[in-house]
Image (tube, rainbow, N blue to C red; front, side, top):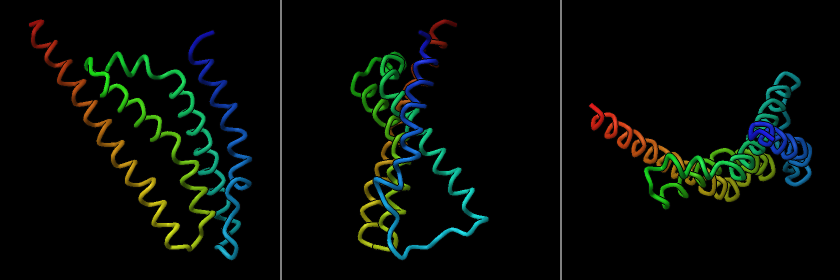
Length: 147
């Protein structure tokens, strides 16, 4: 079976239950704000996209390490860091948004979310940028040596 078919299957198998289970696992905060009828489709779209990204992230974590390893400039620690960072960049949106809905206006809960997700996403962005620059340096070095 082709890899893209496996990715599609894993993505759907993860995304559909995630879409359904989000409000069950993390029930909305009592007394929290309710979206208007005009806002609701936009929130549903976000929930659907976060569920799909969760599925794609799980697929990446299942199938993505060999490719990440091949392009990581030969550094195993960099390969692992990039692999985990990309995985987290994809899967974190589903729990992140659902936790926002769950904690409502609880400022301590919001602070935990901000540090647990936002700071880790910043670190992941730095790791991916570093890996990309290392990949470019390696590629440009090879291109210069061919001339």
